[in-house]
Length: 165
Image 1 (tube, one colour):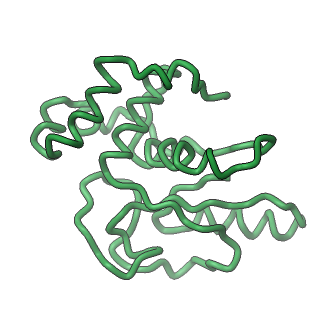
Image 2 (cartoon, rainbow, N blue to C red):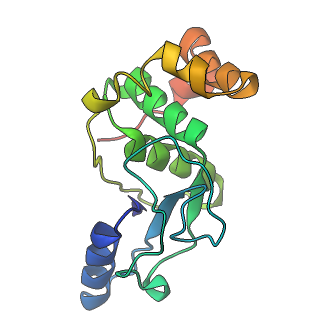
């Protein structure tokens, strides 16, 4: 179960319920690079809805797997891949989770079942994540190339990488 982190209420609610039921489900936290939930070094973050500027009071790291830290550009890529592949207009934390799944996929057992939450809709990100102008104003050339390669050239790997609902 991949879960975006912020206040950590959702991830800890899931972790406590999974533990109480004795399930073997691994919970993978997804956090923003620059967030202080799983890292001691603060950094600039421009995608809202994920991460925190201070450690969470709710978190019990013993109940969680190894976190996946996602850069802002990876959050954007995840959102745009999800929109292109599944016509789901999702927000920044969901895009981060999609990117985290893609990063971890090679490490997972071939029979693993992957689940995640779509925590946020993308309407409030139309002027940011889904705005080419905003991207050009906020990301460097290498990041922009990776974003627009997905958008304009329809990444051939994406065609084979469908997301089950």
